[in-house]
Image (cartoon, rainbow, N blue to C red; front, side):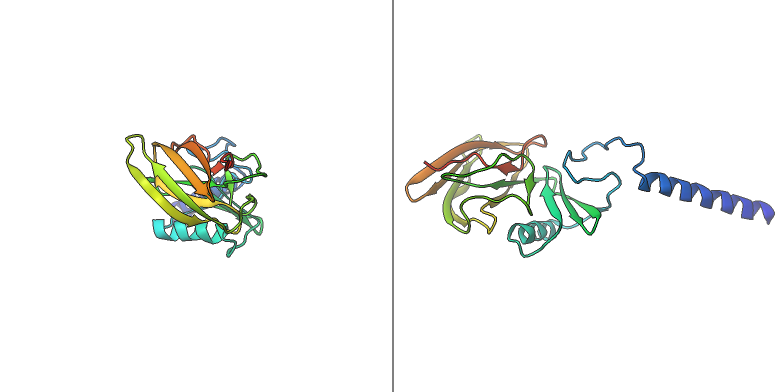
Length: 194
């Protein structure tokens, strides 16, 4: 009986020690696939979510109907910080999120899109978008899309490809090549309509 209590107590101490170690940030090393995103904290809880739920959550932040201290989206995860707690959500493995802010006069440099901080010039305006894959197959064919209150157009594209994207409005056009590999940016602020 005494051995059983001793083993249980020892196990409890080990669990508490490991938990304290992990809460303190572990080794400080990044896990493979962890984003280099400002505000990401080691040991942040990761939440599983189905693809429709994930897309809706991202849309809610983009449309400003959901609020948080910060919400940014890398190529692999959505990172939400609110009330001093950071939560990460894994993105779909077959789709890549990219947010494009077409502009005429004013833009900003960006790599990892901040759903709560990035602001584009052309708010709630309609654009015609065409997206072609490397074989010339149309992913989007002259579709009318309205930018969000943050001035961005959010797209979910198949991963691990390079696309030719054309955005048009009122006789002005911007073209760019956008890739959806893990190392690629999620924030595109270089498409000037002219």
